[in-house]
Length: 255
Image 1: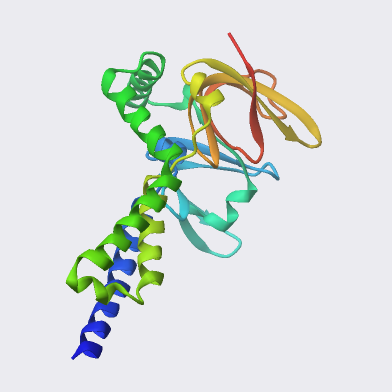
Image 2: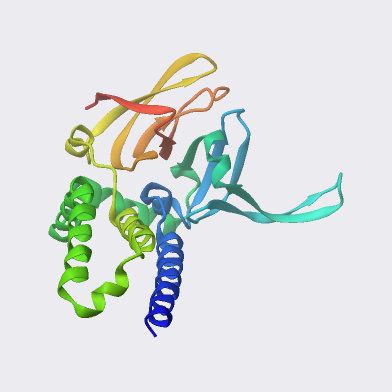
């Protein structure tokens, strides 16, 4: 009877770990990429290839839906979108939302976001501060949850069935913490809503552009109202930009 109960508990933990992992991964999208989801975006790759379309950001991919059907005459097929998988993110130079190419509705929504970035409301400040707190104490959360599980093992009669399930308990703990964790950097946090200068390397040359720092994550930096131009452009265009932190770094506070 005990063996049957232990086997049943093991099955329950395996199923729980699988479902919790799938649930969290399905919703765990990078915030900077998520902010651009639904917008008309130009993705620029490190080899200077450009892909343009309406962005749909997922946990494991980016998909850009073309405004018009594209027919590949060479291979005789029709394309309506372009998919970039997570293992290809390393080839991204930046994502650019050119302001001059937005329609009236997109411009209106974007202006509201810019205003909130400059003058965040009480709810926004509380939400961000709460997120930062969880980001700084996520290691402590793991320790607390481990102590909690250990207490259950000794205090609850049925807790003996948890013995031997440490692997799955740790897996669930890690998935939950990864779902609430975030990158927190005091220097960047102080400059949210301020104009900064981002430095990055392209063709072995250092390049810079300034913009208003809206957000950052462990992988990306997001700026609004940037003055940006491609290599062959004569004049810069106003744009919102998401740039990988492996490429760009906030180097200066602007004005």
